[in-house]
Amino acid sequence: MNNPKSIVIIGGVAGGMSAATRLRRLLEDATITVLERSGNVSFANCGLPYYVGGVIEERSALLLQTPESLFDRFRLDVRIHHEATAIDVARRVVAVRDLATGQESELAYDALVLSPGARAVRPPIPGIDRALTLRDIEDTDRMTEAIAGAGSAAVIGGGFIGLEVAENLRHRGLDVTVVEATDQVMAPLDPEMARLVADALEADGIAVRLGASAVEISEGGVRLADGDVVAADVVVAAIGVRPDTTLAAAAGIELGQAGGIAVDDELRTSAPGVWAVGDVIEKRRPDGTAGLVPLAGPANRQGRLAADSIAGLPVRNPRALGTAVVGVCGLQVAATGVTEKALRASGRPHRVIHTHPLNHAGYYPGASALALKLLVDPDSDAILGAQAVGASGADKRIDVIATAMTAGMTASELLDLDLCYAPQFGSAKDPVNMLGYLADNQHRGLVRTAQWHEVADLATHGAMLLDVRTVGEFAAGTIPGAVNVPLDEVRERLDEIPVDAEVLVFCAVGQRGHSATRLLAQAGRTVRNLDGGIKTWRAGVRARP
Ligand SMILES: Cc1cc2nc3c(=O)[nH]c(=O)nc-3n(C[C@H](O)[C@H](O)[C@H](O)COP(=O)(O)OP(=O)(O)OC[C@H]3O[C@@H](n4cnc5c(N)ncnc54)[C@H](O)[C@@H]3O)c2cc1C
Image (cartoon, rainbow, N blue to C red; front, side):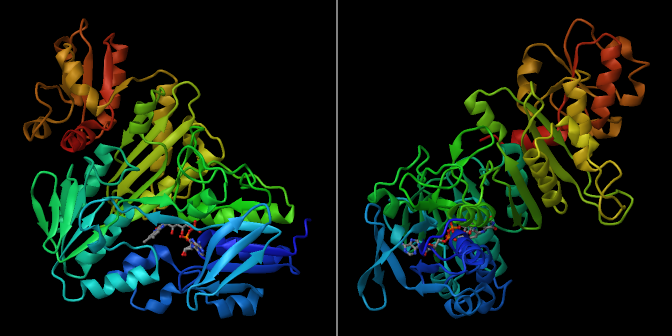
């Protein structure tokens, strides 16, 4: 084991405090000093929106530790209202300002851990100072005070924090509008999945303005680029976060291409004796690129890993899948790995699978539909990413898939997973197993599929659109130009299905379409199944700007 005498940690929340407590468990004799600019350490940032919404009733529930409790248990020297203002990497010294007294001092270190997190992005538009952000307890107090007596709010940004804040302000009884500059909410999802989230927001009475750029914030609300004004007593900016690299950059510590601190596999920065963890660093993504993954799980794990590295234990910092979940208006929205839009943008070959299984056996009361999506490398069958949206069970499926990705399992191997089952919890063929069945069919070349965004092009090029749902379902609405031959009649009506043109089969969610596709392929037709059926196609078409 290494034996550093003096360890300084900048940032006393997720990554910083994980590092501090692990270090104490490894190095009982070291002096460990934690510098925290705000008035609190180890607070529950992820709970802040729910305190604003009144779901978490006690403010004290957000404060998990105090400097006193951390001293009593871990003998940590935790200094709140103390800001690190500069790092001299040559002298191994941190300059510190006591924000309460203004007093300046220096702290020498043998090992330094940077966990300063990220800062909320504030776009340079007139009136931006009126916008509230939500990063810490002080922000939370400001927001709670501002919404008291307010009737309406505009939340700029439809990412996960923006949507959590929007839902919680609605919960407080405010009229809420989400203003999002891109064409979809929830960037970690693809548009046809994100559309389901926007639907849930609107069903809850939250207005969603997509493709709407805020250009000015005034007393009356938010003015958009198209001239519209969203009236709002309170404006919240939740436009995203940027790694807080100010100190590191000034100290000459190397930054990466994505704008975070560059670290090696042991979370060491370019400066000797300096480690960095959490939102401030760049992570290795599943596709090998470096990216930013501002999430609590990686920050906590990296805090522990940096401590191990400082103590001289062997360390391996794994790829950051970016596994995340958010609750939005009764929906669970979860994702891991990369999106289809990112794969398309990078030109990387990929295969897409959509399914719409029930979260548990349909005959057991309370079953609800999930929208599940899997992204697969067509050559290696590796799992590249997954997304799930549904009232229940989305978190479990994404966690299972993230585990499979971490273990290096292929998409087809998802069918081998021996998952727990009883009717109130799942299905004998769990939705994750179903993804494995579908991936296996594709990997073996048993079925070809088409995506919702390919339908118009296929039809233009002469493909027959074959709706194999029932006559009643067809009459209630179909894809323009489709012909109806219900699955149970396909064998008898084969002569209606051309041999000299491509056939695109579809049903409600893809399951009957799969049976029809297999039947037609064996009957000599060139056939594809519409992945995710008309349900995915409808969501996709509605997601188009
Ligand atoms: C409202 C909200 C909800 C969230 N919800 C989720 C969620 O549900 N799931 C999830 O995975 N993630 C969530 N996150 C993200 C998660 O909280 C962060 O990814 C995680 O806290 C990052 O840990 P960190 O240690 O890098 O930074 P932080 O936990 O942000 O801690 C950094 C600390 O460093 C301090 N600091 C910065 N500079 C200095 C300096 N120079 N001197 C002294 N102190 C300094 C800051 O004051 C700050 O307290 C949420 C974040 C917010 C704000």
